[in-house]
Length: 200
Image (cartoon, rainbow, N blue to C red; front, side, top):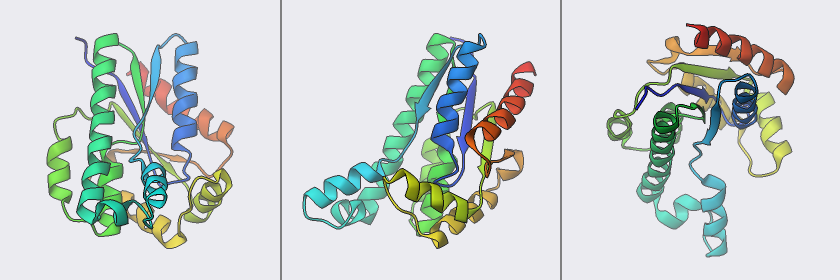
């Protein structure tokens, strides 16, 4: 098996990770670099809908605080494992919508326990060859979340997430991309960074 090429996009909800990751995988493939998009969401909208259907307020209320964190972290662990395995077996570049850091940050902001255990569980995975932090103002991110109509985010929570990412020990190794502009502008900036990284 060859060494997998992995590109991970991280950032707060509303930064445009999903939109940019999907589009980047398509552009790379069209340019002759076979790539696949991989989602790495924790499933919050799904768990919340399930909880409400069963008469509960939300996912944490249904599963309990510890149970919810365990399910969320496991779903993300499996998503990363799948992406790494497929990339190694097929030789395709994996473009990841989120990575393990997203789990660490959300756990810290919510005040969840188990941060060290989560890091140990994710430590088996190789570090992505390129990690791009899509930097967007919390206010702009909140507007985008509301516009997509799937869920909502409190401004204070988004600010906490942004500070959480910037406070990660690994943040200095991330490539920061201004994601406040329209998708085409952000995509062009992302392409420049990815081309340089692949050339290396």
